[in-house]
Image (tube, rainbow, N blue to C red; front, side, top):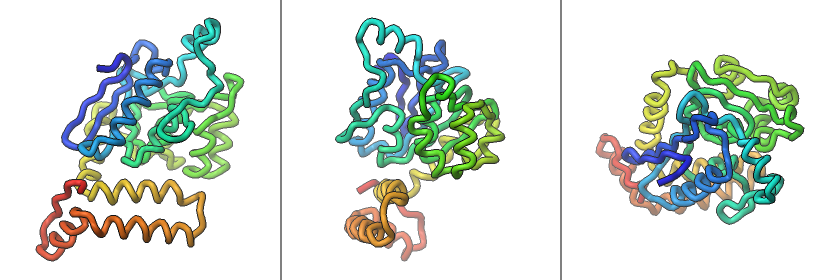
Length: 263
């Protein structure tokens, strides 16, 4: 049981719902720690092949809970400038979804600000409700754009990234689609269904191959073509020895859909 999260697994898809609707799912210390703890378990769980991330109520995530942070700062319980530990390296909560080897689908249901944008942009897919709206308003809080400033130039180019991060002005789902920031905009009452349909498509692929492909894609901008080829060869040699790769070959020869097990 979690205090700030709802977690369920349907077949091979984990559904993570941020659950502080009275605060538009703003992230406090409890939520941050619960996200980190849960994602460690998800990474190690062979039954979970992908994750759908969404929010309860009318917000996806309104960012860090500044009121809670101010109270913690006053009482000396937190250092908001310190990186938060996650996995083997010093990361912090908006980055954990990008660091997972399993695909993450952000089902953006409403208000998304600050660290909420960081989480949405670190996902591998973004499906937005027609009611969703975004805002990287860090500059209005005397801060810089954290992981949004890292992901946005890679996703939408420097000109749009400058507009989003330096101006900090809100924009709606239609604008996000125009910029290529979301994969699709769907009717609000269809959001979770569409996200789960995408997750089901992913679940029909070989999960170990999907995970290694995600890892490779995340290294595409920080290596040379020669090193990337070496990494690809190493990964594919490992994958060729898996039961799923052998099943894929049998299925191809027998002209039937492959039945993958993640083995």
